[in-house]
Length: 342
Image 1 (cartoon, one colour):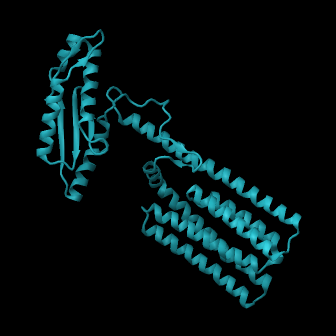
Image 2: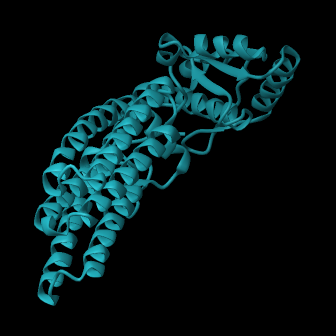
Image 3: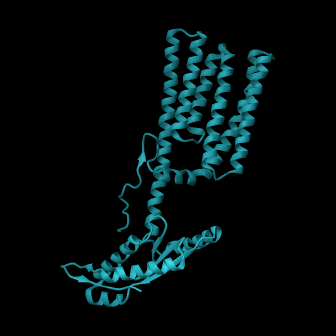
């Protein structure tokens, strides 16, 4: 298998959902971004929670020290405490993508529900409330890290509820209502464009990183993993995993016999063909997503076999040796060369 070229587009991104088309790769991306995401999320929650409570002063200023005003202030405090609880849960479970996403959605939905209640009891402050909603909607799209479609649903949903509330209150003329809807659509449109661009840019950067990592970790001739992955601790990680779960781990060291003679007799191009044929055979006879085939040296290969007992590894080694001995490698000009491995 030839090494992936830089011009290859790489894993596809669903540009409508602003996510990788492959769910497993999307989960890997989210896990990769989780530390940065959680740090930004906690900062956004704490900052917003503080201001959400402070704005309770406006409830008292508008409604006076009435029971309704104090209830609204209490609801603001409850949302802020919920945000603090979400931050604590994220700190306690820093590796959970699902928890981070759920915390974001629940805090935003709760905060917007309380904001809508505040607006209901302060109909004379409609202009200020509309400006506040515009800021909140932009924060939903940009400031609070979330999955793109969830952010869109929350932003659009909050705008629809706000417009419906004003329609029920009946305090706006038809022209004012049209202007309100256009302003809300404009705010959501800008948020949609900005959030989508950010989400796509993050995934394109991650895709480029994966491609560069692939280029660094692969042997350019055979497409197998190279010795660098061993130096970076791949085998140590497999040993640690085997010890942790009490599973077996086997390693096969393969060497093409008399490889120098093949180079001397048929030329280095023929030697390269033999190396590629042997590497392809190793990949064919091993488990693609479990085992690892590594070009260890010139004509030496390592096959790392997690969850494989010694007897199974020995049997596989014999099958590889027999299959390679029976195969022949085509050369330019129609000639063929045979080789063995041990």
